[in-house]
Image 1 (tube, rainbow, N blue to C red):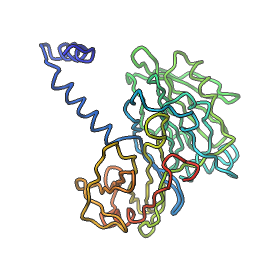
Image 2 (cartoon, rainbow, N blue to C red):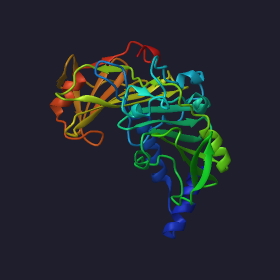
Image 3 (tube, rainbow, N blue to C red):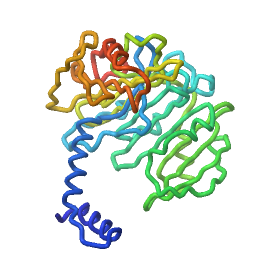
Image 4 (cartoon, rainbow, N blue to C red):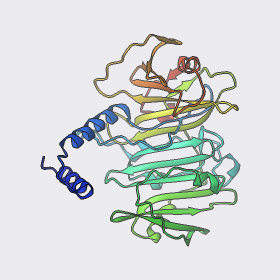
Length: 350
């Protein structure tokens, strides 16, 4: 094979193994996995309030893989969440940040406007947006009530794993600090600051300098709020259960703006599960199941996931991995209360 990918694989593997290596099976396996991911992962995850529209989050953001050059390009507004009328921003009520999975207490329109895909998240102490531009650039902004919550976030942007010492910076009129981690020809910068007492913010972004990274952080505003929404509701929860977390992935290309949304359901005992809806790929053939979930038929996907098809979405309930300690009967109860929105591409109606 003669592609750049083949040459890079050969050079790397030869250097590490000390001999000639045929990259063909490796490349084929990578392409096969890419096709599977393209079918299975069209976006991310979401959470909210019972019988109210909200969304979930996964530990690592999964962006849609590539796009067809003939796909329509939607306006930047396709990536934005609806405004939360009457809800204050983070500076007005720091104590609300991360506590309500239905609301994101910051505005990032200026930060995200040039992106191609974006995943929004709210709940379980964190609010965030992670996005990718058409040129491949990525960034993540996160907001929390404590620095410890930000420390607990898993890094999702690639780097060399050699973080450099911190230096002081100013974001607006607020002090903070920044550090970077080498990432090939780029630097992955981390800028952390307190927008107000009782709030901590962090931007992870590729930038050429500390000043460029700090200028990017200045694009976030904290005087407005938005609704974290997904195109479905969960109308039946296990006893003591409530919606904990919300995330939704939106894009500007493809068949529509919606890619994936999820809700995390949990209780005071530490049990939780994730319900994820993804837009079904073109040509997807729904497989009928032998399990009853309210008005739907579901099937087992391995021992930990329940799956069903509802209109144009593939819907899954994760009992392990993205869940803990709930039983199959609980998952079927929650799936039985799944109610889809009428329009997948109108977040303002969700």
